[in-house]
Length: 411
Image (cartoon, rainbow, N blue to C red; front, side):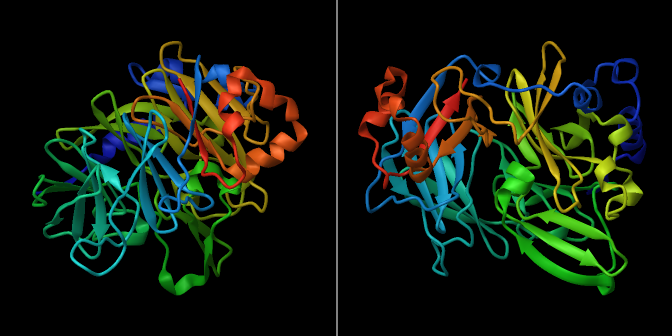
């Protein structure tokens, strides 16, 4: 049975985001971007956690990591996706474990090396066009495939012990489906449409389509690139190739759609408002989502991660401008405090005096995750040779400039 999420519930949520969060949100946690923009701060590593750990990834001919990898940190493993490979490392010591699967056309191959784990983090799943999930264990052994019936692959999936949730963005929209729910054998249980989620425009009005890969401009949101669509009537649309719209939080599945200020919990195939970004006067009206006019007066909440204490997010002012302004944000769940800082202001490492910290995600155990490539470390060491004598940076004693990246975990 296809469900359409109640429009009234969405309208209530969006109206809350335009008003005083303390008066209107009730039990709904409000992340006050409007207020934080008036009181910008500067972050340091101790704002994110009390400890920092460095995990140099083993470097051999079998596990060379290319530039700009995608890193995912699980409870026991580190997954690195680069050069069309998926490499698995031990989280404790960085030891290389296995290359997981491969891209190709044979029965054990997948279409993309971007993997997703099950809830117990015992297996990795990969998409194989047009409608299959390929399964591997954490030693690199092929464990079969699963056909999703009757839907094609979603842009991203989240797997629990009982259900597979798929998200369909504008690039791979299938009918009006936004979320799909399948059982663990791939059979479709339900679908859900999200009326305010889609940015629509006529294909006949498109002037130019290009692919954008400069991740620093839009931060973590465009880590894997974005599609830029320019329209003839001076309108624009930027679409993330693999936006993070689904994640886990303390047993809940979270969902946030682009241009929608509410974070939802997915429970029993229903969307329950959980938190809301209060953008106030900076809110982006639905009818102006493709308009370049007033882009400097709008805030786009681009990237969201979460652990038990914080919501870490990045937001952008002037999303369609030539030089958008990127901010890092922290919302403390217990105190309700929202802090915002310019991403261009480096996050000082006040715990070990290493390089500025640049959080890319939050691991499934709650750590803030970053990584630094060896060449970047080498450049920094030329200006900071004293770091080689810092006992808190012991990993540098075995550092070589042709090594794999160093993973940084803060908790």
